Structure formats: structure tokens, C-alpha cells
Length: 208
Length: 204
Image 1 (cartoon, each protein chain N blue to C red):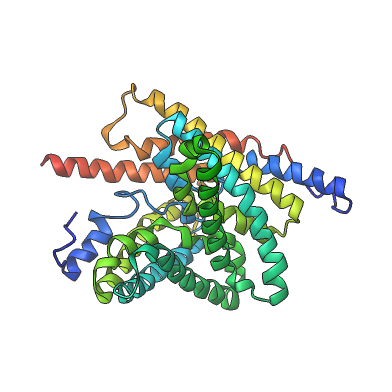
Image 2: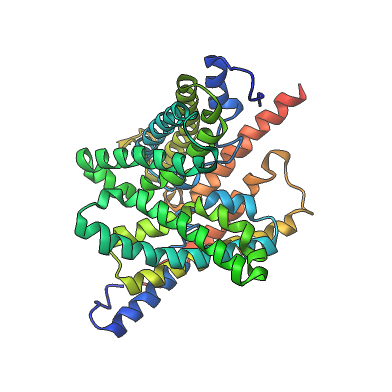
């Protein structure tokens, strides 16, 4: 963790977002709205792109307005800014990809209450310039997406033998499909495994 | 649930009861929709706090589902402003929580002490907004929505209290370093979800 006063370089912000302060395995934030759609890669991809864009844009906006916002109502302002971008994403999906919009159901709307977006707005954007905030939001989102896409790919491959809907050579033919992988419990198990692996790597790194 | 086409009040109430049970067992908002995970992982260390938060969630969820149902079907739909739903729902939830906090503070200090610290947490709990959005998407009627909101809250409370009970025992067990904390919580949640999958098919 860096202290708030030092100005971080873009590279440092990107690395922080991807690994050192990765929202999922460092902070266990924001798994609510996206874990549910990790049974299929396409859905996860759409959710992750939406989430990264919403995070980046709302961080930039919050940061641009940071000197005009009274401290006492900043939470409300942040929520409204986030809701504004989420509505745009939701309308775009409804207009151009109605099928996907139906499949994702309420989860697009739930990006509003995703802790990552709020967390980044509060922790970083509130005290930094718009451009670094945009980078920070974007790469927090990407760091989050990478982990979730890995989970989704794993679940879809073992559960249905496909990735992005394309049949995979071995898994779609000989592999005995694990139906449990596309059901909710597997979401918990696979995420727990990812946390375990990442933290073990971390513990080893600290010992050196 | 298709067995009971709604029409009369009694069948509506029956549908609400069925929906309530479905929300608790077969479609538990936490274990099958992954909503409210953040506070679930963070606040499930002790049974007492888990019960407090759970009770607050049941109360807020039931009331906000009803309020948001009215706001959506009586205000937004006639005005054709459905795309404002997210903003409106969030504002209603936040305002209701604030209001509840003031009322409790004024009339029931003991309850305020028990639930007070959890109320601000609830505003950003995705389970609340999630329940409201599901209710709108599925097009429930007012009575059914009430049952649904209550059921979702009870289901969430049940899950977090059970988890807190299990986690208290975990303190004494040997867990690999990398698995401690959130990871083992998720594995337990997975096992609980597995048990709840067994309920699928009870209500058809």
C-alpha cells in the first residue's frame, strides 16, 4: 500500500491494479455481482468489460468533480455517477444485444452496488487527478476481470467441454462432463481455489 | 409454481407463500445468486453480529421490496421512465435505511443499539438491490413481492448465521496458511450451496 500523498506513476498504478492490490484476492471485493455469471465465458466477458468501463469512467468523473463535491454528500454523488454509467451500459446492452441482456438479468444493474467501483472511487479517485483515476479504475477492473475469466474458462471447460461456445478437442468428446461446475456451488469452490493458489504464491514470495 | 395461476386473493397469498419458500430454499439469494457476498464474508465471524445483520437485512429487504414495487409499477411504468429504475431503487433503499435509523434511534434505543451499526452497511449490500431487481424482472404482484422480499431476507440471514456458527469452530482447526480467512469461508459456502442444491425440485 502506498501512502495517499505520494503521486504514483502510471506503471505503478497498473501493477497495483493487476497484482499488488488486485480487488479479488487481495481485498475480496466485488465478487457479488459477477461470480454468478462465471458459469459461461461469454457472459463473464460482457460483465467484466461493462464493469471495467463503468469503474474507469466513474473514477474519472468522481475525480473531475472532487473539488466541487461537499464531503458530507460525496457517497450519494458517487452512487449517482456510477448509476448513470450503469444505466448507459444497460441501455446499450438492451438495444444491441437483447439476448445477452436477458441472460445477465439483474446483474448488470448490480454493478452499482459492486464494492470495487465504490472502493476505487473512494480510495483513489477522491484524492487524485482524473487521468490517473481513469487508469486506476480501468486496471482494477482488468485485474478483476482476469481472475474471473480464468474462473469462467475453467468452469465452462470442465462443465460443458466448451470455451466461448466452441467445442474443445478433448473435453467435448472423451471428458465426462462435470455438471456441478456450471451450478452455483462450483463458483464458490473455484474462487476459493484461486484465492488459495494466489495466497500461497504470496506467502512463498514473502519468505524469500 | 405454474400450478397456481393467480386470480383470487387466496391464490395470490398462496403464491406468495410458495415464492417465499422458494426464495429461502431453492433459490437462496446468497447461495445460488451470490448476492451479498462481501458482507457475508466480512461479518460472519460471530453468531451474535451475524444475527443482528441478518435481522436488519430481513427488515430492510421486506420493506424496500414493497416500496420499490410501488415506485416501479405506480410511478415509473405509467410515466414510461423504466430506465431510471436503478437510480430510483438506490435512492429509495438509502432513504429508507436512513429513515429507519432515525425512527429506531427515537423510539427504540435498545433495538437501535443492536441493529444500528449494521444499517449503513446495508445500503450497499447487493442482496437488497438484487432482490428488488429480480422482483421487477420476474413481474411479481405486490403480495407475491412481499413474500419474495421476506423470503430472500430470511434465506440470507439463515446462510450467514449458519456460516458464523461454523466459523466459530474453525478457530481451533488447523487450516493451511493460504486457505485461512476468506478462502475457507468460500469453501464452506460452497458446501452449504451444495446442500441447498438438494432442495431443487421440492417446489415445482
